[in-house]
Image (cartoon, rainbow, N blue to C red):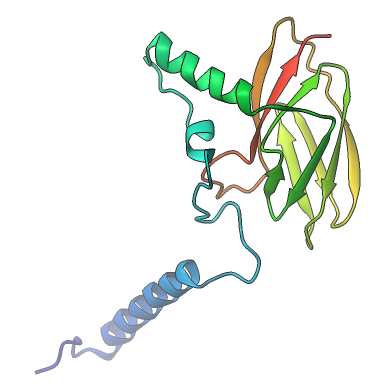
Length: 162
């Protein structure tokens, strides 16, 4: 008695599906030589609380607690460092109309994108990005590295009016 079907074409198809499943499993469970922000990197420190925004229908107290966490974590700066799709600082505060200097300290090209602002940054390079949001009140935006597999934002940008 055999577990495989008797017809050769069906047997080959079953083996191909089995091999594909094993390949996918190995690919997603194999440690990467460069830590990847977006593919299964777990939350570190308070990232889970920062990057998990209150759901629709959250109470005013839940919304305020999240806002307070963002504001207490925000670092006022015009510099952002990205390495392997991890931002430092992860929450930054900038003035509307200022320029944010983004440095890629990683070994590969990276992207920065937030609310219509996008940049491709070569390894070891710094790119200035104008922060012209034209906000009337303090506003909060998330930013990422353009990875479609990202499970959460790379960081949070707090923009204050001019």
